[in-house]
Length: 152
Image 1 (cartoon, rainbow, N blue to C red):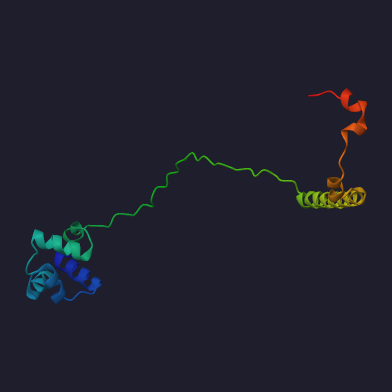
Image 2 (cartoon, helix red, strand yellow):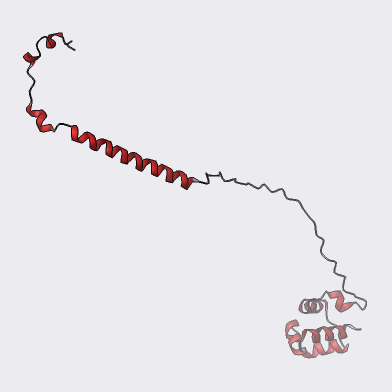
């Protein structure tokens, strides 16, 4: 296969007309036709442009025995990366915290109720303040007790 035939096959595979290819390489349509018919050969600069346009290496256009290289599957390399994982362990709270809260509320309610009953009974035995203000204690009625009391 000649260079011209390879240019023609590559152009047809890409779906490009001779005129479009000529504009891309910046030559005339007749020049592209001469390349394909074998009447002329592209220059090194034009071969570089054709290689770029067709996305093939220049060797594929020039060499008869060019075979695309076999594509090897990419090598996979495993790299161990040390990772530090922080684990937060939640502090367990008592499972029956509602029961403890209910028990505390009941104890508080009973305490308030008992205290109210206790002070209610004492209220009846107390002396009103108006009666206390009206009474005056006479020191002479106490007699010898006043003189025995220590003075501080």
